[in-house]
Image 1: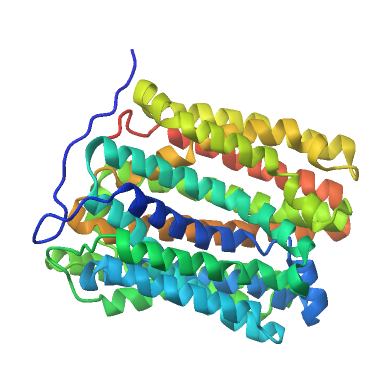
Image 2: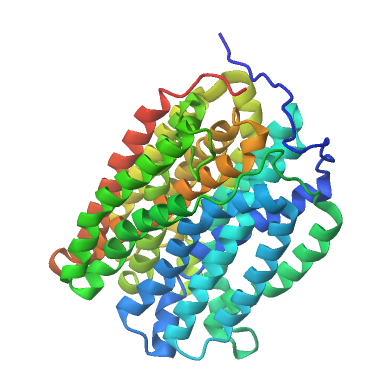
Length: 477
């Protein structure tokens, strides 16, 4: 018996009906959705070049990645709330403009610490822009149009994460006008200018019908929770695990508990906290978010580790290291196109199937690393990368669509902020945990065995993802 997708119109969340999001508007917001994810991964293959050019230590280079990811994760929910309050189109345009300016600052950074500061600001700009993408889709579409838009969003998100690494390698090697690694940031500027031009004409304005003021205590406590977890995990190994890292990790559960208590009290008092606990009563949202965590940890950890292993261990240049994952990107794109039809016929049962395929692909890549090292590249990784790409395409777009499927339109900004924060925090956590594991094991085990061990740990995460996917609702409303 096949599962079907049912659809129902929802309120736009504005005092008057919001104008529909047309094709050009959808293209524009998807372009904006791609930018922050591309920039999270684009620096992976550029880090060796950045380090050599700016004489940056390993700890500072990790901050180039972590500063962006942590600022992005900390401010995403706040960005969604501000869009609900002041208008999503307004925040979208402001965030995109700031993203372009901070990208320019990254590309012109005279030293490593200036680059770190610009990356933090770039992450904050992305946090203002990205939640408006999902909230705008939620507020201006319904029924089959929303299903199509969310499917395209999921495909864009997954493809951007792979394409960023490939694009980074190509841009560094191309050395356009002698810019070297700087081109990975400078390339954002013309894209942002085009996006602003299109958004001003094609993206409608929406806002919540009942906007709430910013939850200041919740904002600070969420920031404290994310910072006390991600910063020590990201910087601890390179810094030698000083006392502050352990104190920070010890503070994390207390900060998280205080955040939950404050949000629950506000929710019960009838206010709208930054992250309403009542939102998690929605089964599709709760179970979808739970699945996003191991998926994103494994994805970002793999992308970071494979970039380091291929360049520092297998001796590949940035282009070859990036293109080694081209099969994953191509197959992901093709299967993403078929995903909506498969979901319409089989419901969310395609997700555990995707997890199984991803597991097979990861096993093939692990075997290739074990047998072919150090001669590891496009040819050796091709079978596993292609199968893994198919599996990921059957998971990520479906789960992203599922998470927001039953969120009321008036809470679109909050819901999208929560989802993207979960995804982004997990991406940063993947680099911090799997990246730290790989780099810690390499001196004692050698790079091949460290890579194989790390991939096996990720395989366990894929198994967990598959098991969690069995508990998803069978249909998407």
